Image (cartoon, rainbow, N blue to C red):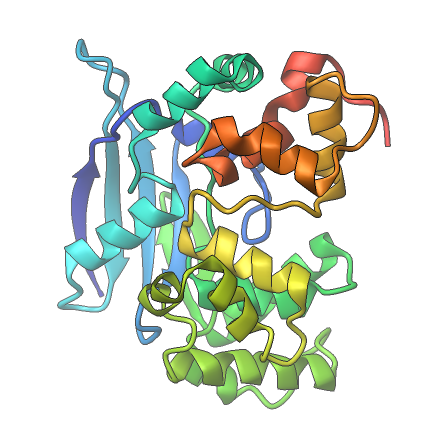
Length: 304
C-alpha cells in the first residue's frame, strides 16, 4: 500500500459537510466529524483506494479548498483518484454557474441560500450504482446496505481512514468469484454477476455512458438483468455526473415542487418541463436541491 495527497479548489460554493451528511445509496450520512471517508473501486474497476477528505476554512478569497489523502496500491496515479473524487462530489463542475439558476428562479435561490454549497453527491461509479440497484431493489435499503458492507469487508478491500475502518465494494473480478453470500438470494447474486460482467466489458465505464448521452445510456442499461427504467435512470443520473437530466417520475420531487411553487397539485410532465426550463443546464442539480432542502424552506417535515 502507498499514500498520496492532492487538493481540489472548488469553482463556486461547495460544502463538504452537506455532501458527507447527505445520506443515500452508498452512504448513511451519519457521524460527521469533519472528515469524509471514501472507499471505492477506481475507474477501470481493477484497484481499490481509500480517501480521507477534509475541507479548509474559507480563505480571504472565499474559496475553501478540499484536501484529500488517499491510500491504495503502489504506483496509483493521484490524478485518477482526484478525477473520481471530484466527480463523486460534483466538484468537476462550476458551482457559480448553478448560482445563476437561483438568480433566474427565486425558489431555487431560496433553496441555495438555505443549503449553501450543497451539490449532488454521486455514487463512486456506474458499476457501484448498478450493483446497489440490484441489491436494494424491493428490499429495505438499510438492511441491504448492511449486507453490502459485509460483502465488501469479506471480498473487497478494507482501509483504515482517520481511525475508522471502511470497506470498498468488490471489484468486478472479485464479485464474479463470490458463489454465495448470506443475505443475498441466488437470483440477486446472478444479477450482480451480470453487472460485474458488464463492467469488465466496458459497458459501465463513465466515458462510454457519457458518449452515449442520457437517453441512449438508460436504454442500454435496461439490457442488464434486474435493471428497469427507474434504476437505469438512477445509474445514469447519479453514477455518471450528468447535470441536466430532468427526472419527471419521482413522486417525492413532484410533491415538493408542488409545495414550493404553490401549485394546486403534482405538476404534469409538461408542466414540470416548462417550469424546469429556468434550471438549465443544471436541472439534475435543481431536483436534488429540491429533494434535499425543501423542508428547510417550508418548515418542519411532516412525521412519516
